[in-house]
Length: 319
Image 1 (cartoon, helix red, strand yellow):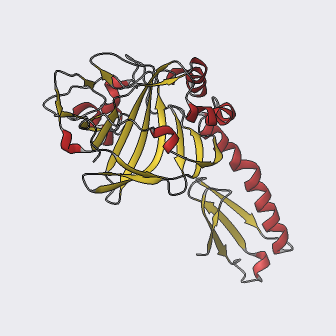
Image 2 (tube, one colour):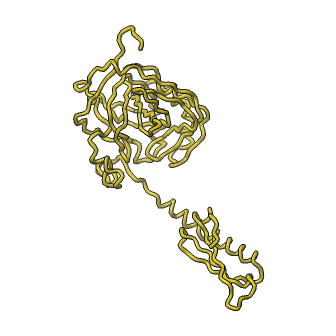
């Protein structure tokens, strides 16, 4: 049974040739066109020429199936929301899909409150050794947040002797993590992945004040993708060092992703120094995502018995 992979039908198109009962030449045969995705069969009785039939079949398929795909895209709904009490809200994430079960049952979930009553000073953690570099990037409106995806090698950070490579960064507003119960205006997540596919996230906290220089470079692109889910634009070479900054003091704990599937085993590093972002920049980020995602911060999760460490360098000493 010959077939071709048809972009028009979104799947393989099988062509079945059935000779006529009288065994006449193949231009009198019956051709059946069938697509598993279209779930339909087109039966065409060959007349004078094979070319006429193929053109007719192509025209028929082109005028019928694309409308079905357009309708499918129109009916798309968000898989989760941040609205408390909503059927797809944070308290229900763990029940929406089997693979999201850890969102409800996991005991090492993020975000958490970084309470100094529970924090232990651990100087042996050492400075964050990051080796970032400028790389080609794209900005993407994911509906629930705005992400800068690095399409090239943007460098890495080394944690406990393992290199974690920077894959993307995105923003939450207000902050997901709190410090002694205080929630700031915005949080940036720099998401890294090791060769073994383990995750490490560096979080930076912001309060309204002076404009953030890194976001200033993103402003024209934010306007281009505003309120357009899955829209992405190339932004050229982006240097993540402009987002990371140089602060040395940070918190460290083991947690999870803060969006479904809430995978655990994530190494979290939250920089203690609070940076600033302008009200205009904050509003630009909020307005770019869907209306129900303007406040895209997951509620605080139970700390349980986890250790929370803080690194402070010795005075006048460099590691």
